[in-house]
Image (cartoon, rainbow, N blue to C red; front, side):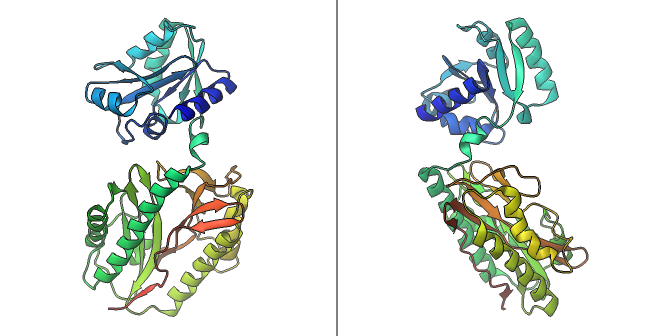
Length: 362
């Protein structure tokens, strides 16, 4: 953690700030080893001379145990009091950054009042810690790979359990139960089992819809292991698949392979997206791939880098990336196939090993 703290301090200096207030839970955990929970109530302040964590009594002992490089500020019910202490620090700060993407307007108004009284100005920042988190260490990759292995096994278990009459919600529970019983701390997100027309919704939620024979079933799942996540999507059919399904499925699979065969360190996120998008756009379904090709996965399920029309990222070794092209046809359903990969100078290492055979026989 000392090395990570030093790197953040250098980034703070480069940004011409005297200190940085950090509130995003993943960033707190990455820097200190404390927390990582989505609803964590804590504020971290890092400057050249100080490293503080301000929180309430629910977390005092946890901070002491997991973040020995940081000084605990026991804030009671008012974590904002630490801003007053920051104003009295030596040397006194003048420009203090905050994570603009992770702060409500109401909190910012309160902070501005504290900052005014303390004698410094707040400056919005973006990506200071995230830019350091984006390249994964061997230890981080090992945890992600454990999450991937559990997810692959959970998908295989679901395919064995799948039968006519099962609802989407029952299917999602079968997967979640398996994950939790086989090493996952939690699911990575609300699992998706979307059958038939529901599969045309990229972020569908499981319903009481009964899964029918012959319809596409989009299964988007992930596990969390020791704070790190996985992300996998497969599309399957229960029983026999018709010609249309195979045409759509094979198009999406070809798009994914085009991306996986060409992405490597040095490739830009916009170009990565085009590798897959060009394949789909050459077909009658060219306008049905509405989202970006992929995103990084780590302490957050969705983080940098990105693969999309708007991405400004250039890939580096040991970044993770999902490669998940899709075709979505309202009234019919959808097909999405997603692998999680690690980028290297020579290509990608495909972590996801779940079967891509789309037909499940019963």
